[in-house]
Image (cartoon, rainbow, N blue to C red):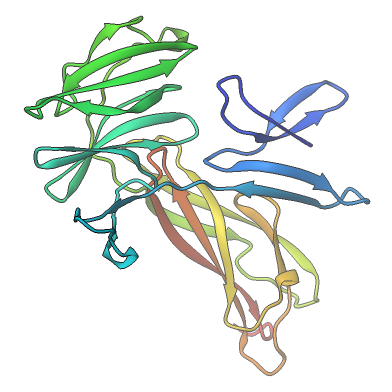
Amino acid sequence: MYLASDPDGSGPWLYSLDVERRIPHRLSSGVERYTSVAASADGRHLVATLANAKRTLWRLPLSDSPARDSAASRILLTTGTGFSPRLGPGYLLYVSATAARESIWKVSGGGATELWSAPGARILGGPAISADGQQIAFSVGSGGKTSLYVMRADGSDVRALTGPPSISNGASLEASVRRVSPPTIMSLTATPDVLWPANHKMVPVSLKVGVSDNSDPQPECRITGVTSNETIARTDWQMTGSLTGELLAERSGGGRGRIYTLTVTCTNSSELSSTATVNISVPHDQRK
């Protein structure tokens, strides 16, 4: 196990190496940034540290004197992160970032629209707005090259003013104007959904998620929480993968049975998330 960055500078990511075949496998994805990884002496456990950087936007009134902290209010964004804000006539522009891309968003009339994005591209600085608010200019870095682009305020008519008219791998640089919604979790099932016998052993469980999304064909889904109707210790459960884990087949002798509730969060490429829960029970006895 080791940490390494991608050629585009993203990461570091968590990798494993097939020592015999000398083949690396990337294990992590998303917006996490791993800072260290280590193994226990017996090789059965890993410990890793990671940082999830999250940039947000705030509103502060202008005055002749320093403003108090209480005067600042957070701007609620459709995306999880936002930076490089620019004010236009009746709208706000900002940049949002994921591990694979950066995008320009427009907030107007209580709604948010993604005006532009491209795989592997990085927006340098922030967008600039013309005096009449009808044109937007922005610089893009990709493949070691920088280009200047201009588009209309609705995201249409993207034109390259300087630099190559394409990004790395020959992919055409085009605007995509679309309204993005969180993923829709249509189904969530657990196998097994009943743990028996209650023999105080850890039992492997796996979850299957049915999810759809209007902008991301493969939203990332993972278990983000484990609770129970009974008091449980941290050693009563452990995650072995994004949708797999182990639960202790145990319940209180004086209760009606233990019910584990697993929370799953699905996040798309625009950093919008939805959650759902599924129950796994440990009956008090074999009677239904």
